[in-house]
Length: 197
Image (cartoon, rainbow, N blue to C red; front, top):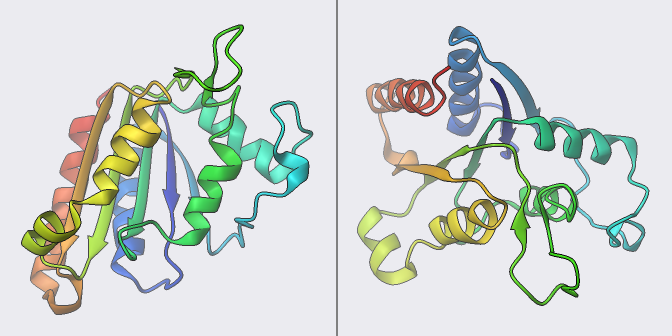
């Protein structure tokens, strides 16, 4: 299977980077092909210019390549921290520029964009790994876990991805080396279970 893996964290020593490496390693071990992008390392520009706004816009080569990989992907993995209940801005910009009409979704003929789009993604499964320094009970009771709704309902379900799995690792700032190693084992198991050949 071809699996798109997107990482959004600026610190190369972060646990997010360790998660992404475990994901890619497990995918390759399982015989899959990973399209891997570390958005910060690649200097991905998150700003959506007016020139890319229309459906039939001529896209820069790097955005066109991301769109092509997204359309080919049979599975998707996203890795990012929880910042203010949202992904980092660079990842939001990736969503804006890459999860485009006629790539990830389309409106039926005669719909001017006000209706419910039809998902176009080939991927049947999406997995999101998050990290947080907010305890789980506070996240659920006070904030309502906005990342779950964002990825599951607002993005992947809308784009036709049928199966969704998300795992939040917390609390990173006080975690031990043993905990982090155990979490990485869990990452590998989740990837293996969700992307079987």
